[in-house]
Image 1 (cartoon, helix red, strand yellow):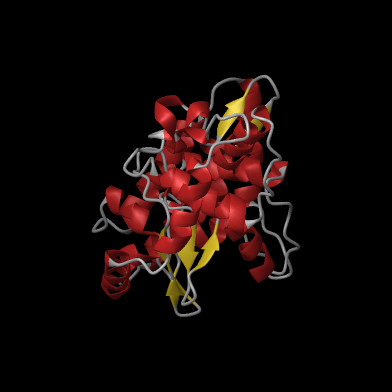
Image 2 (cartoon, one colour; image 1 turned 135 degrees about the horizontal axis):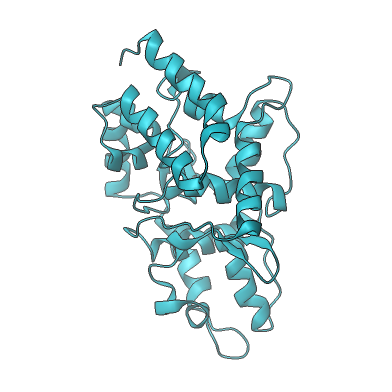
Length: 278
């Protein structure tokens, strides 16, 4: 897919200017979506959920073939077993969420006004555990928190992302995540925005770079030929390693704020959790 210099300049300029020009989170999100639409008018907004595959019919066909008979269904079933197993007090995860946990994941991350902190879906699952006398899971443990989240988010498949930023404290956390997204780091001096806004649609290491809107819709995901499970924040850590920046704590405030901002960019797009990604 050809890209003109003017289009790339537009996207590159957006990386530098969006934060300074946007007066509200929604205005900033709209500017980013508009720039991607201008660069790639042939890709529908709803297809941003496919990420890099939106630029490659062959990759999308491979994805559809894999998802017809997912080889990682056993891992999702492990998560379903954790979800359905009662706590020692007899209550279940479903008792902690509206509608038994269906169509709720698209509202996360949320900002908790009481603690003045961002709460991710994984944090909400752990809050359910501790409220019912159970020990919390480690956020980076894919055998517990990973598979549990993989299943729990499938209960919201098709729900449109609906992240809210309300109040000064929430806006401060959102803007902290925005700064992280745009800040260059590591020995290679890369930023999230540099790859997924300024160079979205370009090829790096034989792979297309996905656009930022849509990226938060499909986690946890099973990646690569061995279908390794990645939560979104585990992916953040892997990206940091790729640019030679020491990964931060999974479940820590920096990544939570980043996920808050990053997820907001996918507002209006439907969730499709626990899928394959190359």
